[in-house]
Image (cartoon, rainbow over all chains, first blue to last red; front, top):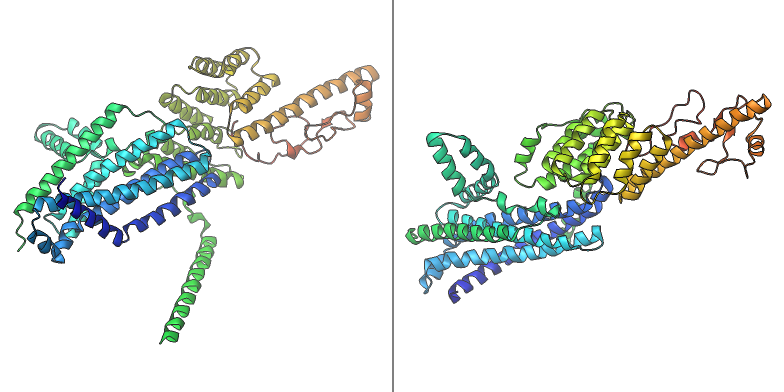
Length: 258
Length: 309
């Protein structure tokens, strides 16, 4: 990887930390420890399930919110502050700027997820008193969540490369919601006829399929994850991210920054 | 300048604390004025499918939330000795639709639904429907067959179906050996106290959940009282046949029966003999599920905690 990309990524990460993004970990810790203690008293026989479901859902939602709200400002903020011109006046290509920003944001989310994962396992140890072999499946769910973040980061960057922060947030969040319904969208397409079928099928394949990356419930019930699913989800996320990043680069390369 | 800032900080902090306390107090007052407006009595969305869609894929967490809500709803209604549990079945249906593998919702849910009020909702058919849905989605779980058989046995006294369900469950891989025995016992001696004792012993021995085990103990204690009272009343009848009168006390009966001491209930309290030869327990309230040994007109309080039948 070009050293220029690494520099941009490192600065993006530092900026996110300076913006106190990692403060969300405090809210996460409070949420999880509160749930772990409280749920045993107000419910029956689901302490372990709640810790896994709530923990992984919180990791996912916190990450999505961070990805969207930081991602949408990555380009526009640099333009607004006029720091982009300083960067681009050096021997840095536009695509390197976009890719560096992406890796910086993705790195921030990975670090955030690692800390949250420690919290999830800590809470699990608190309620179950020991780890069992199937608890290792939680790592698969966390891995899929990181793949989900990669897609959302790239989408946020894509929208950020041509739109205002507010609209970018709306677009990215809408795609997150639609992507969660992608299975339904495909079902709808299968039921439709004629032109509607083509449009719906196209839309169903264009939006990111987040439902395939959400295995939280299955992991909570210790259902095994096939290696094929892991492999294909990885490839899907990487290709989708590459597609969105390529789109962002294409737009940003042609954007008039004057 | 610094003093003024400090003063402002103190005043703001006091205002914050006072306002917060006032809000809490007011909310408590408002809740007292309109207790019917609490969330547990309202189910705004009845469609499990719609809730599943709205959960954006996080249906596992939603199921946990709905299950907790179900437990809270049942707990409140049960505590109030309510006779209607209108939202219980829909809450359970939503919970299990969100997560068809959430086993506690079937296990406990059926025991919330099946018993007659105030012990439960008095809806054994809904309980059976719930368990069948559970078996459909978890066909390898013998425990669900066991719980379904239990509903047939305890609530509907449908021994034929109970035997069939236990038989089916006994064919599930890794099922407990008790299942085969229960299928046979159910077919031959379904109405006996011995069968009931065997079922509750199986429940106690095969469950890891504290509440279920405690409840099984509660049932076993009551079955012991029923058996004791049956045996003692039979002894009283024999005594009367031989002497032409009822025994004057439990001591006299013990002597006539060559017993080592006065018979006592599981709490260690001696059974009482009435002048007309009836055998009673001293504190029937301590045995939630007894059917014998209670004075005429006795009204049992609702069971302390009821999970299975």
